[in-house]
Image 1 (tube, rainbow, N blue to C red):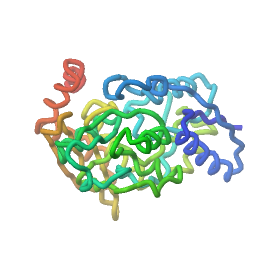
Image 2 (image 1 turned 180 degrees about the vertical axis):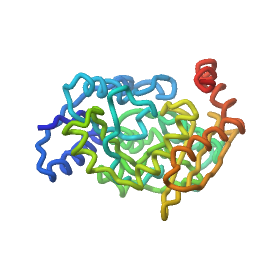
Image 3 (image 1 turned 30 degrees about the horizontal axis):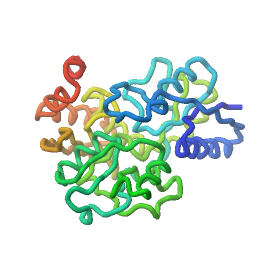
Image 4 (image 1 turned 180 degrees about the horizontal axis):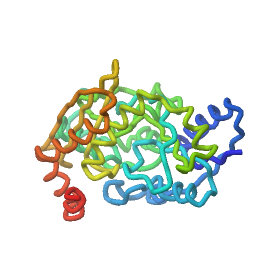
Length: 308
């Protein structure tokens, strides 16, 4: 029997059960254990203002290390680039659609002053860069809570990950899928992470069978960009990679919170060098003005982090 740790949101449980089903197809009996994280408990503050790595993973990883669960299922975009010693990403299954989605109205339909809800600094900054006349407002809550707030006319539109809407059966709520050239996705968006102890045990071995090669290569490059930029997940940074014929195509962006400064770069290379390509692109972003943006957002803490 393997115990799967998961957050308690509707989407998190869908993801955990999706993994559970695949493990049970291997003949492995599983049970779910819900763990409440810091990010779940802080519901009235924008995530970018909390400033803590691992908002949605810390308590789950502690349970892994203590041995009270055998594996954890996360949204990969919630995971910092540095894992605790003793833990590993045993599998990154095939990725869902990584794009962001507008719900409620298409971009071209939003009038000046329209209220758009998002809890993401990355999304807010990119929206301001392309539509500075919009009112970007913070929105928190699970996917169903955010959709309810939209339906109550608290917002004219909201931005959500297409993957979450598809997984929960709400694909019909998507009004417009945003091209990565307009809204560069979060690092790892649309991908799941199956985390286990790095002990070559049963959980690690069985979960590794769920790994999808192209997805792992793509998110390895994206996470390498993020690592070069400090490693947090609540940052005004987007990165998106695709893999074709053992070649990786990577784009990344840093945007100032007010949307006035946009640094966007691309890189290509051999898939086997995904991490190297990602780190190099992250370094280029810093050199071309990204460092100043991150220091302005996070101050001396970011400055010290970027110099290590």
